[in-house]
Image (cartoon, rainbow, N blue to C red; front, side, top):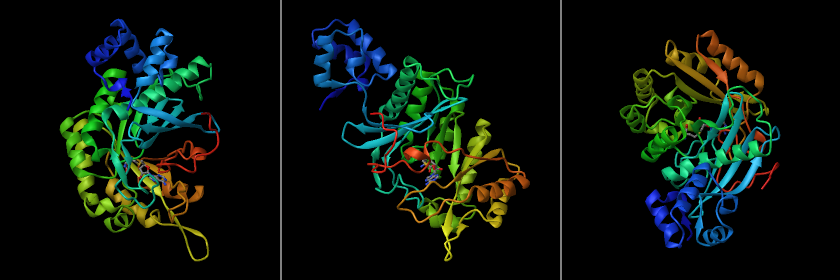
Amino acid sequence: MKTILFNLTDAQLEQYITDMGQPKFRARQIREWLNRGAPDFSVMGNIPDALRTQLDACAQTLPVRIIRRLVSSDGETTKFLLELSDGEQIECVLMRTTYGNSVCVSSQAGCAMGCKFCASTLLGLRRNLTSNEIFAQILVAQWELRSDRLSDKPIRPNGDANNGDVSHIVIMGTGEPLQNTENVIDFIERANHDMGIGWRRITVSTCGIVPGIERLIQWGRPINLAISLHAPTDELRSTIMPINNKYKIAQVMEAAWRFTDLLNRQLMIEYILLGRKDENGETVLYNATPQHADLLSDMLRGKNCMVNLIPWNAVDERQFASPSGNAVHRFQDMLIKNGIHTRIRRERGTDIGSACGQLRLNNARNRGGDTN
Ligand code: SAH
């Protein structure tokens, strides 16, 4: 197996390079390339050809290798299918926005949570990612942004706040971050320390693992916490999210409010709008009736939170239907009338299967815009 240079400490890298009969300073040069996300040795312009060829035979740069790259039709979203050193595959998504460049990273290969509406869990959990494997996803995005700049591709949309670097991280790719909490925490510490990404620009999204939220409280960094709620009652939530049999809504919310109160943060609530076909083939709402809006409002009224409404994105194997735009707006209006802050999440990259819940292993549906 090839040595992954990114996984070596500075001292180990130096040893590796001097063992090849090279001067020490080459190790520092290579480290700089690694920290910029160099996907292979061919891009390392200040390294002699012979050494690059030699390295290529026995080593690779990052612990992830890009096997496919898909670009949405508007050019703003890029999805990467990445291979880990043991052959597992994960995905990460780069979103270029007016407020900056946001990267959605995976925390696990596959997922054990079994949510009934999501593609990421269809094949179960493969394994936790290491902190390096999570970090490398940011580097892949950073390198892509560098390529944008070198090719003079305009950063779209060309917002003032967008300086061309990764500025925001959401841990909302495949996997449940709070089932891999220590590696996720280590990753966030490094993203903050090594890449200067502010705590407030980093979001951890969880289906509601209470001990994991307790750990975030103890850790005490003012990151954003998002709870994937999706239903206002335990009865309904248990039908779509098996984790609800272990941690009930009241328990999850109690821990979540303690986190946001302590760190003075606004709690993000994720709420998918799920439809179902009735016997006439009409789409009826499963979790977004007026009664559900009232129950949700009772739970959130007066609290510092924002409800992100996410129209369900189609997943072939799942028996739900996407709600109409009107139905989504009606549900939002009911919440607003009850004084609840809410917004509808703009879906990015639906055409390349990179919208929420569409990330999956071995994505046979990857299509269109393939530039790799
Ligand atoms: N396991 C974590 C993070 C990954 S999911 C969590 O549950 O929060 C990121 C978000 O996408 C979650 O809110 C998830 O419930 C939502 N999601 C999953 N499948 C979806 C789908 N098909 N359409 C829209 N959103 C979906």
